[in-house]
Length: 166
Image (cartoon, rainbow, N blue to C red; front, side, top):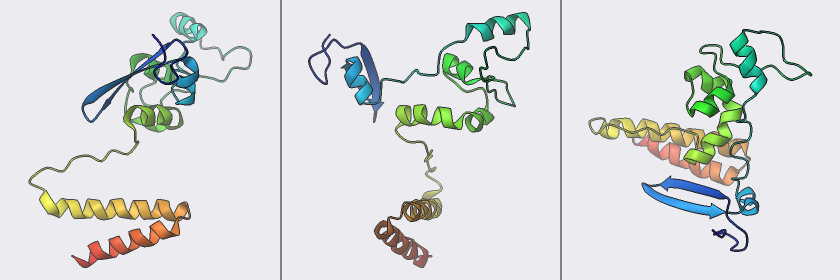
């Protein structure tokens, strides 16, 4: 199959994405996949056979040749390799333990990293305004940190309007 991006090379990377309930499928060559950010999806997911065998034997010696020890979650004992292999985290603490490693994958999979949640119908407007204010204040903090003062001024005005309505 030919790459859908460049139309020149053979496609070796096949990507399926679900966006708003619709599945989109792409077939890319290695060069286009790397340019679009799909070249290293599975980097760091490899298995270390030495760790597996030492775990079976019960050998708790430190890693050989100056290798860094495997980082594990303090609560459940999962390593990042375990998470990658299983496709799910072991517990809630894994998100904190492997935050830097999981973040790029979560952004790539979900498109964002913040959970917005849903509001129950019976909660209605009473619950939406506080959430909206909280969201605007967070966006204001980010705009100030990025020194985007025009956006910050607009957000500040929106916050004042919402607070006035109370």
